[in-house]
Length: 238
Image (tube, rainbow, N blue to C red):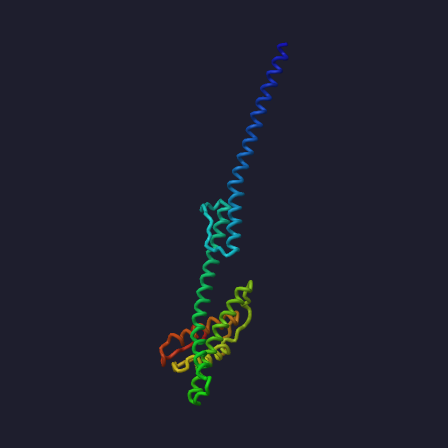
């Protein structure tokens, strides 16, 4: 009898210990699951919602970061924040550019409209020659602005830019010189292009033309009448 009682007590203690250990394992599992949900699932859900917002154009949103390099989710948040900042800055510059171009288009359009209204009745030959020259200048100016918009649109649409093409810069600058003289018009700038004839460069032709024409047209626009404008294209140190 004594032996059976001891066995029963031993079994009871074993069952109790097993229950305690089972409860402990269950509690640990629950706590681990909660930690995983709070530290991984919830932050990833927040990252997903923020990324979706950025895709919709909400570029001012930012995720909180811990600064801990061991925190993989934190590093992901930082990367998304930097991406959003870059997109926001690009969008801001694009809007500023479009606003500037829209403003710049008003002037030549106003000039053209005025001369076209004036020519409803045939003007004297001398006045017609002047009107024709001015309208041509403003048309070239508008054409350059539209080309800049088209270049911007093409750059945004293209995933990559091919910079392997050899661009004939001397030929491009020769055309820009003619346009510059036409744009100068009555301002009578002293325009001089110093171009190294055999100096080509690899890059995207449209982007190079847009960049160089901007520099030339801004020089004409902001340089006082009659002053000298010099454009140089040569190898550094040549």
